[in-house]
Amino acid sequence: MDNGTKKALISSDKKNIWHPFTQMADWIKDDPSVPLIIDGAKGSYLYDADGKKYLDGVSSLWVTLLGHRNPKIDKALKAQIDKMAHSTFLGLTHKPAIELSEKLLKILPSNFKKIFYSDNGSTAVEIALKQAFQYWQTKGQNRRFFLSLRNAYHGDTIGAVSVGGMDLFHAKFRHLLFNSFFAQSPYCYRCRYCKKKMTFPIKAKNFKDHNKKAGCKGECIKEVETILAKKHKEIAAAIIEPLNQASAGMVVMPKGYVKEYANLCKKYGILLICDEVATGFGRTGKMFAVEHENVKPDFMCLSKGITGGYLPFAVTATTNEIYNSFLGKYEEFKTFFHGHSYTANPLACAASIAVIDILTKDKMLKKLQPKIKHLEKELSLLAVHPKVGNIRHCGVMAGIEIVNDKKTRKPYDYKLKTGAKLCAAIRKDGVIIRNLGDTLVLFLHLTMTKKEISKIITAIKKSLQTATL
Ligand SMILES: Cc1ncc(COP(=O)(O)O)c(C=O)c1O
Image 1 (cartoon, rainbow, N blue to C red):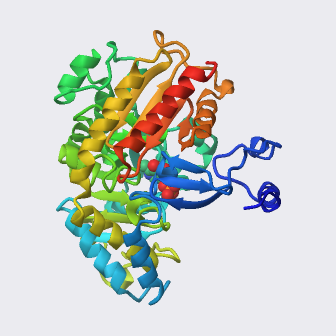
Image 2 (cartoon, protein in one colour):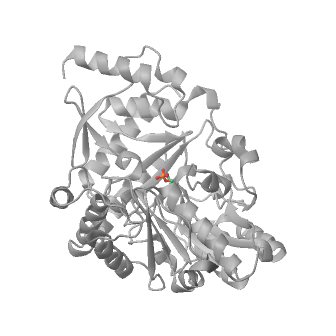
Image 3 (cartoon, rainbow, N blue to C red):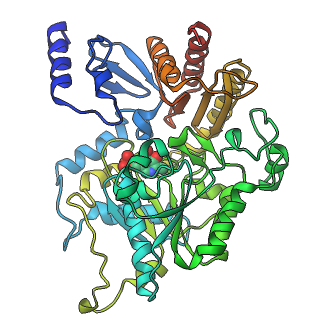
């Protein structure tokens, strides 16, 4: 792209567009490196308007699952577009949605029997919350509350924000939200009860063993029980991002925590919603995070990787127990009155079918295991750096928390934008990753090679050595 075209595009962007999660006063400053115009993509790489290539270390915000321009997904989409781009799902149906529901139900935990389609992670969560709420109404119970965790992120719509536990994003909107209960996040590195320093990688056998290593008594899960013991009759459901509170900076949960959480939901008779928008479709090393702890929730929310990062799409899966409670005579109004214009978009369904076929037929998850081990080995090399306070790793996801003082765990002043500065330095080396505060986040394509993984870690190492921290 010539310089004139580039300049015109940047000027138009700065004049007309409001970007998500962006301080626009910084964006519109006259810095020629902002914004970077992405003009192409292939495999693990993004290409800018000058043809310079960048390793995409965050799967384009956790959506691209199998690399950019995956030939099998491309082919499926081209075939579908020659048939039909869209048709409403209200009162009509179509083959891609039917075929996809069959494929999803084959790979989901066996208690799941029904698929409700929507178009992004937040709506998948809204639907689960509303279905859980209405379920109790059908039982003649008015359960108005939800249980969630501090540091939780479930999306940006009002219901999803109501169960969100990240004050930075959510506190401003409190007066708009419904009330939820929040238990402590199992964020061991910054937990006041975890007394011992744990070295990366943490190899715990179970939750008890983890707590022994952390020098705590599992106070995080005790808080869940305290809330449930008092309030369970008013709580419709508990929601959790199983294994990893990704948006909190890859807060990986202690082994066994999710199982304990699920057991408490069962003990107190409340529904469980597992938000696998980020963790689903292999990112944890198994198809779904819940499989690691043999948890069978009442709802699963899926999005992001479901179309391989091609189209906005989402699924809320549930059980027959939930679905059947909505059945009744037309005039009883038990219907679930919820839907979106793009519900079950056929193009998105076609892409998702291709994704599931690749994951299941190409033995992707088996091929992934040595790459996950390689990532762990590479991350161990970073753990010794004096500015790396904590490393959290789960499957192809990792968070590297940078601190001002390793001994005291003191963070850098927020104003210094340390994480953002490191990402800018890393980008100069041809690697794109993003920071969440001062945590550097890796969210890798399942198709990334060991060599590419090492390249990302090398770029991070170099940035830590050269940056003035
Ligand atoms: C766990 C989780 N749930 C929900 C969402 C919201 O998804 P979307 O951005 O598609 O609305 C996200 C997005 O990052 C997420 O990580």
